[in-house]
Length: 245
Image (cartoon, rainbow, N blue to C red; front, side, top):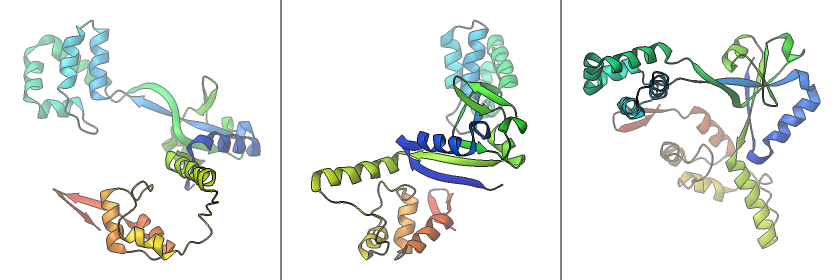
């Protein structure tokens, strides 16, 4: 099944979940479980705590792990000579890191996916086992497994940027007495001129440096141009230069 991403005001996302629950039935709608895994630094501290190693020692080891996405202890041992020397010469360090490497990447705690909702034809429990977290019912399978099973996953994203727009409309009405009708005229050339000049700060998905430069090069003059731009833009970074392909 395709994956549906729909954006809502941050403060009203709960109302959308309540709506689909009423429409399709509480037993046909479920949130999705997600697992926090034991990352390199965290697992070292956890193992040290269980082995009664002084916190200062395990904290020192943990801080030797480089700040890098998806870094592993094994990779850190290759990169950090001081950590490797401690591993080779200190028995306690070796024991902590060996156990930590065995546990690394394993689930540490269960929580609820930030935006994923699954909607099923028959009751959800007839497809997958369920998990009760306080008062929230979630699937026991993660979103990737649900997708492989062919279930329909909806991403109801609560965006603060949409909340800001809603607040701004109310503020203009209150202070200026003006009703902002932002969807009435989609062909105002002054708006597209702002896009072409890169004046998109605070606009979701359009405020990064790469996207701003891309829009200045694209110079959109219609909503279709903007849709195509945000759909096709893919930054590729080589060294210090960022190029668009």
